[in-house]
Amino acid sequence: MAAPGRPAAASKLPADIEPADLPADAIEVGRIADAWGIQGWFKVLPHSADPQALFSSKRWYLQPTEKGSPTFSGTVLLRVREAREHSDSIVARADAVGDRNAAELLKGARIFVPRSSFPTAGADEYYWVDLLGLDVVNREGVHLGQVKELLSTGPQTVLVVGYEDEPGKPLERMIPFVSAYVDGVDKEGRRIDVDWQADY
Image (cartoon, rainbow, N blue to C red):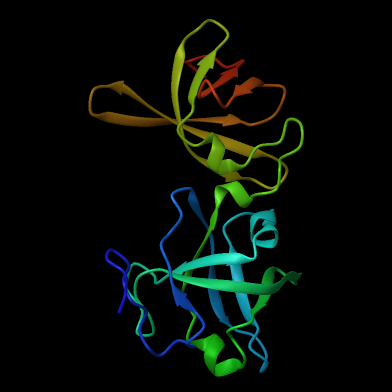
């Protein structure tokens, strides 16, 4: 019987993929695309171009897609044995997934890992998830909005900053996340200082 508040996984999954509670700091980092090969490997589509969080954690928490899954419900814990880059995606295998049939049952699952298991970012490096929601303020002290999302345009990353020109009229500013325009990031203060004008 499942613990209170913890949905039981459907019985189609291997028995050693256990129901679990999603950690409070869990971040969605990718999804399982399909089985890969015949020995239980599966292909993962990461949400980031630099999927280090997938490699740093050996405990992945899976949830079905928003549309639901015929194979499981709630949250399950998958203990990952190995994950590595392969072509334009990631391939991984887990102790509980022994063959292609078992891997196919995971197709479409959303992958979460605890933020605390992310590798430490280098100097002047930031995880996108840490920038979302930060206030953006220019050198004159003008509040330009909050970071809604980030876009990778190839050579650089762009901050998508949401603001309202007038109440109820949401707009966006696009600010390249490069040192020429970004003076500094204060994660604790929830603020990014930029050299950017409100009318750009």
